[in-house]
Length: 103
Length: 241
Image 1 (spheres, helix red, strand yellow):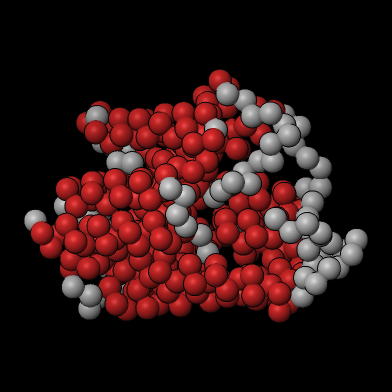
Image 2 (cartoon, rainbow over the protein chains, first blue to last red):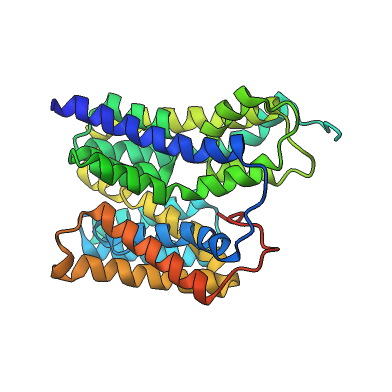
């Protein structure tokens, strides 16, 4: 398959799935889910996904393990002080950039 | 129920900070896409049709490497499952102005931040307010991607390298604060991180693609931790993310 065509089809597939997840509940579901176990799984899924997406991949995100580690630590500390998402992201980028200049 | 002053204009006002916040994140996404040699128009198409940071980032690797349709479908199902939860919550939160057509249209714009603002309103929300709320974040997301994808090709390598960490840093900022207040969340994060690292570093699992490693880590952790630390029903699901 033509690579550009395949990229477009993959993008549209991704969009369709994402859309259906968002649209089906609000359109059709009016009752609350009763199962405590299913509700618990659904509650934990976002944290599990974001952790698995972040680690260990964040350490290889900058092309240099040490600058990435530094950025990760800065993001952690900034998160512990409950800074906004954008501030945390910017601080991590600045930390990576500054350390990259030094080493 | 009373309409309060939830007008289109009020929605725009509430959406402005979200839109401003989305711009740099989308910019980082655009830069990453261009570093993976994904054409600018494809990056923009991804952002305009998906409007999701984590899902797009994971999907981007599959798209850039021309991976399988099955992988991208399962990946999005798992990563974006939280939108289903938000959609359930919002279904109890919208007023009579949300007819079938409005429900089908507005659901495309359910993101973490739009959900957080919409669901925090005291009264029911109407469709005009919701569209006002979604407008600027959507524009910020699309525009940031365009600028990032274009800049990615001309930015110095060390600048684009440091932008690559931005989305991951944002994920840390999403998961850390709730983990300080909820033991189950903290253990989920530790467990999922451990499984993900094991799958990454143990050569036995090298046949798995990155997407499937994330899927396995996430589902396994959530299912195990939900069994050990069930969430009491009065907690409103997924509100904190």
